Image (tube, rainbow over the protein chains, first blue to last red):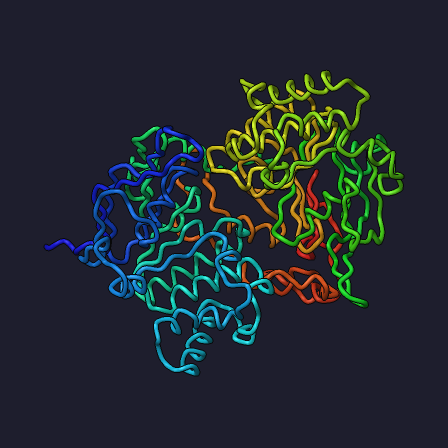
Length: 269
Length: 333
């Protein structure tokens, strides 16, 4: 049987940042020789702490950050070679949803305008067609279409995150990168958004790359987890295998930090 | 402890109702008929989602409510003294010294352009007529207590030079500056990495037992609640809907909202075990509009166990077992 070609393939990715205010001080190695493959339809979680390089990796994959060296292929195409207009089709195929959607959404635009904006920029359809599509997308993510006129500030945190997802879906992407997209949301809202994302993934044949420090939540959402530590992927595997036999000390520390239920009270007859 | 004991608790809140003004005729119910006790040295956990009133409750204890808030009814007593009736000077003696608070986001709690040590020392200075040197020494001692091995170096650091976990420890040192009897903590670990959360959880526990602190801990960190709290309260739409010890509440939640909330948590069944597979289960519907609460139970529209009585009046608190309380018609109400 022939293996399915990877949707994303990353090889030997390196990225350094200059340390702030440090004349001659060493650079921070944000990514060190990262290799990564993501199969189409996968749900992969990139788990690591602040400074582990997970957001840098996500931003490199979305071509928002230039690596020092290494290669990225998306659907077989050399992503880092794309420039200018040739980047546009790629930008449609890969969409990013960020943590703080309040900051990522234009506060002056209405919900419907925010969702229609990517279509407008890409010159898709007429104005009324775009408006109809925006309304349909809002409906898909569970925002009542009557709320299309509301601005981000008039929506709750969970609704804003739904709005950010609707905007990402407007251009029919294949890969959605969700960088701490659940942080700061109430658990019942997290659960709602998780259910919505799963439904959308199946319906639109999407691939998800979750980026998070929260291993507990990622273990519920993703089928596979890759642990990032000091710019390296130190371990990767299906959730159950990772928990059953973590091989890297940092994975063990992350597992130990997962909140556990208190012991059951003794039965009183 | 049951809240009809003869000896007054450290903190006693009775039938507290707080509204926020929202326009000329409208008001938002933030806290509704809340009664709770915190004993000396006791850790009480408070679980609930955004907008359920838990932060308003904490701010009311400290007298930090915004001008739009109005205490409609009820009392808050600390060692028998009515906090709501305290005048400015007296209130200041209690606030920050005997009762202190730790907020969620340490980067907002610290002044970014000042070194962190003086920010701890100024809390000491505000409550003692001590020399600058003595205040400084006290502040250094607090920094050491919260686990900084190089307290002097940290003393001179700016907030941006510290990690999120270190900043939250500085905030903890501020809260402990005057050896309070009661610390209110509003999601103290929510903004941190999971391993840092685990460290802070352990630190809170050791400080609590070392100094005999009473702690009212608002948290989504079930690990912290499980490890530290003796009692857990669940709050929904301004009301306490359930209370019990952590083992009872987490393993056998009585209120339909508690059951829904706990199903939505991505937790492990036991330390080190993989979380149960499958997506967390959401609670259907959304929280009620607090400016138009229904006459009956606020959870009724989302409740899988609703009965006709739920629409008529809010259920009263009942005690289905020792040390357990619930507001739900399923249990009598």
